[in-house]
Length: 136
Image 1 (cartoon, one colour):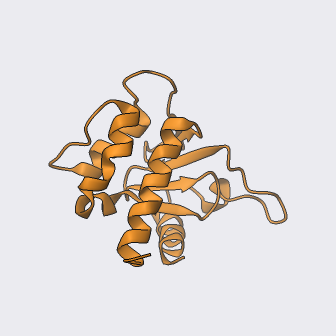
Image 2 (cartoon, rainbow, N blue to C red):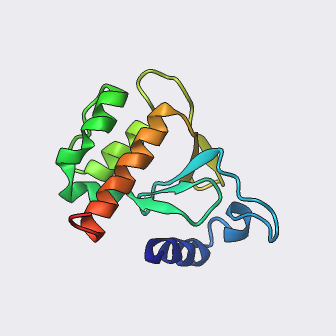
């Protein structure tokens, strides 16, 4: 929940993309048909919801990246692991999907929900749960 609030605050302060253009209209269902990658703050969000995962957490959890690396057939590499992961998600080597820019500043990209991106989402979820709820 803290991460979602932090992301919303950052988006509203950025001035580059109006939060209202990303979030659903009041009373409308959220669109969960894609993931949104924030290349500035390294978040991956579920569609136009406030449900986000922090890609920077992989720095302390590199051993848990095997499912992502196996899915994409590529290693998440340093020195900047979160940037490597974001690029991997946005530009898969197999060309199975294309990232679509959102806005004009090159900060946000839409990627489809599919087997590859869901593997990333699930792995990031697992990493966050391990970091925030050890032993669960």
